[in-house]
Length: 394
Image (cartoon, rainbow, N blue to C red; front, side, top):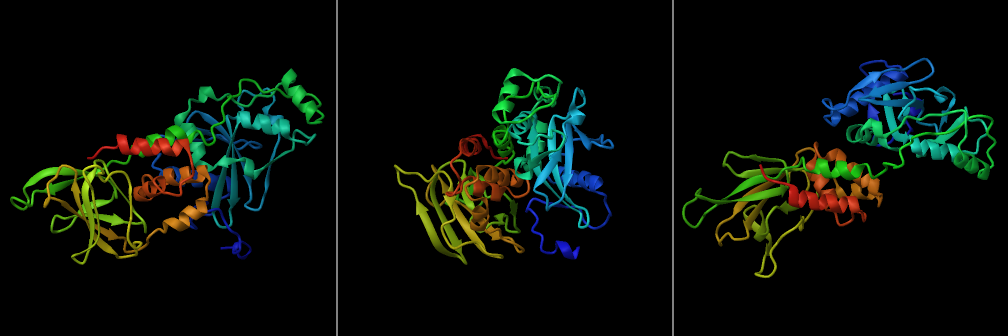
């Protein structure tokens, strides 16, 4: 790695393309997008065609035209010229910023700007040179996830391409004058989508993706008659990563230090056992059954920890239960508090973190979704209800 970049702090969502190849900036961007698609298992739903020209870096992603602006990890602004867009039918639907370090094969996508957002940025822009407009990197929002979400969830016909004509609408002209901008000729935006999709684009996506997480059925043995005689099943929504051991005991691998325990139905009793000794118990009453998310009640999980969760669902008599072994990862345990502190109370960051882990680490997504520290959010509350009521067991 280049010495001048040793002290550079890359964004945590930066994509490393490996050192196997020497890429130019454009091909490094294409590889980074391909990596992002593979990581999200979108190979069958997102397709990219390279349509770049000498002065314009254009991608066709599904049916969307996406113009890419390349800059470095040190840049704070992106330079944009409107000249290529005047009366051009091949204008982009979206603008995508890409911060590229081609010495170390690292790319970060700060996010996208839609047509209506660019319209507002242009009107607010104080520069008189409309062919050299500086837009702050911070105005590109949502990362590569927002790009994919727009492409997967929205019909491209509903997002008009950026179009610039020689005439100026009365409304646009008034706004320009109010901002003391001198215009010599040229700007009107037609048919731009009126809705901004940040972060509302995540509302349908998060609720849809959370449905990908299915619970698992655990058999309840009727220990009052004969061991192994099955009388009922328990639907476990969290934890997720289940297998069975040589004794046919259900076993879940734990990758986070504070897992959330969540069952489809209410419980009469739940206890935690360590080395054949009960170390924690919760018992329901006739008026207060155990339901909803249960937060890990004892010391945090560490690498190689192992516990047995003994669970008796509502309606199951005393003496009948399921034993579920919780076995911590042998390599790494994610510390939830540290992760939550990094997310702060930013709704978008929470949504993004939950969304990107649904496939690769569902227990982490569930723990974040039901965290006591989660920001107030209609999107997140709706997703909780969707998961509890709509999830089913295999």
